[in-house]
Structures are given as structure tokens and as C-alpha cells.
Amino acid sequence: MIASRPSLLRPLVLAASLVLVGAVAAQVVPPNRRAAAVEAAQNLIAARDTALPANLVDPFHPVGFGASEAPADPQGNEPAPDPANRSGPRTDRELLAAIAAAIRAPNVITLGGQQILVFGQRRVKAGDTLTISFEGTDYTLTVTAIDRTSFTLRLNREEYTRPIK
Image (cartoon, rainbow, N blue to C red; front, side, top):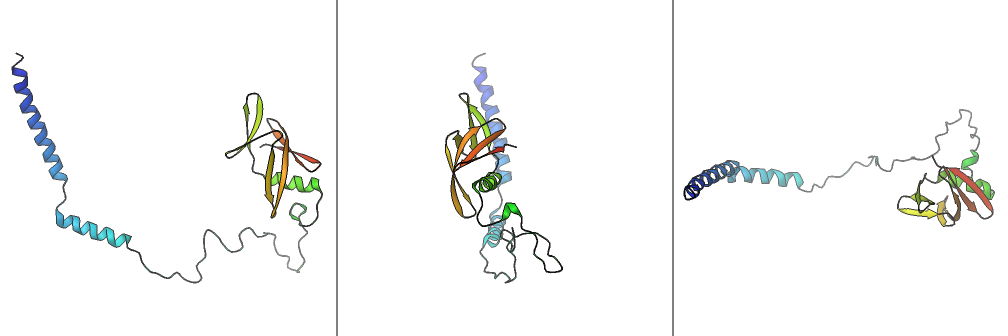
């Protein structure tokens, strides 16, 4: 009985390999069809020297993007200035409020019983400083307190508490 098993196994393996070879042979594309497909692919990826129209608008940097969207007054009067967007001298409190409003809302995590603000990859604890670029000027702010729902920033002697949304 033991001797009959190998004799049955050999024809099964041979039949399976023939079926496999037949399936692979059916998948091979003739050389003339392959050459046509390769030529079509090369034509698709070939670099083309085409000049772009001069009046083409760049969709990633449109003209006037971010400009004030205040409607023009038909009588030519200037709109009233927005106190949050004014330039010129400000008090530290106004400046700190404007900077805090411009900061993207961080996440708050608790590690070892201490609250930590997470700005992307940066982690900030209470007492750490942040350098923020605002209106073309760099400001160094100190994080004085972190709560589950808010954090407090200090600029010079002024402090401002901003909620975390």
C-alpha cells in the first residue's frame, strides 16, 4: 500500500503542471501586439513642447486671492477699517489677541498628569515659549497655562486666554 501512493502522486503532479503551463501560455501576448502596445505607451509619455497661452490663470496662485473682499462703495468712499486687521501701533493686549486668534487650534493631551499643547509635531508645556511670525514680524510668546478647554499666552506683560475649539 505504501508503494502505491508515490505512483498515484506522480500523474497528479504532472497533470497539475500541464494545466499550469497551459494557463501561463494562454496569457503570453504575441510579439507583434506587444510592440504595438509599447509604441503606444512611448507616444503617451513622450515630452511635448507646447507653449501655454499667455492669459492662462494659475489655479494654485490666482491673482487677487486673499485680497479684501469688502464691496466697493459706489460713491467712492473707503470702507471703515476693521479693528482686527489694522496696521500700525497697537497695544500689547490687542496684538496678543490678534496673534492668538491667528493660531491654528492645537490639541491638548495629558502626559504624566501634565497638560500639553500639540501643534502638529511640536509639543508645548506650560512655561515653554513659542515664536510666532505675525504680519511679517516674529513674536516670542510664553505659554503660561494650559487647561483642557483653553490656554494662556503672554507677550511682554500682557496675558490672553484663548479657548480651544
